[in-house]
Image (cartoon, rainbow, N blue to C red; front, side, top):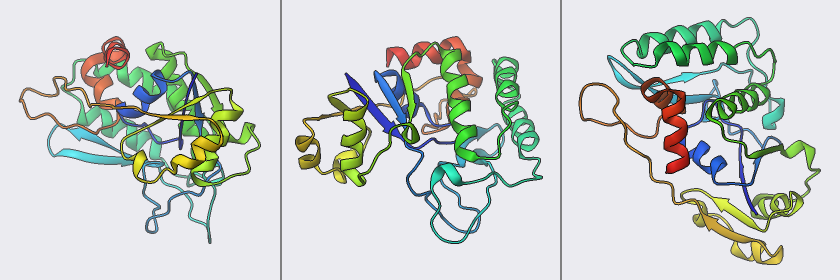
Length: 234
């Protein structure tokens, strides 16, 4: 049984969904510290790259409230009285106005933007769940706050993997650089590499492919069915 674990990111990239698809259980790591960077707290938990039809790669984001001191991911609030959903949706529709699945993806986004919550992680998790359901990916999803965890760093990953009844932990690119193998050995957990290779697909009329983007890019260019098949077959 394979477990994968990751922070609940904002409209994550394809590799995130590939990791979920390759797992029996996926755990949203929502009770670790939020990665603060500057006043706007920009990180992959509240922003992601897309492809604009004029200017190439650019970022969309959800504005959040910065509080003093460390914040756990599940406590970070979306900035109130912000019209960010309209800004993001209109921006995406404009950026992908020549994409063949513009209307289909806009419809999916409208459903996602009906999510009503003041917390960033709650929005991200529910958005990911809606996308997974549309793609037909049925991996069991659990939140860290359901598990009563007590360890940190690599041992936290091993603890979570054990608590959800798995004996293998799936890590993404670069995970071997910071994970402590002895922690997995202590819990009798086998760490296995995701080995994700970003698949290329037709993005505009030219041959200059831009990888590492939000799954939204694939949805606009390939549609729900095409994106789902690409992930499952990767």
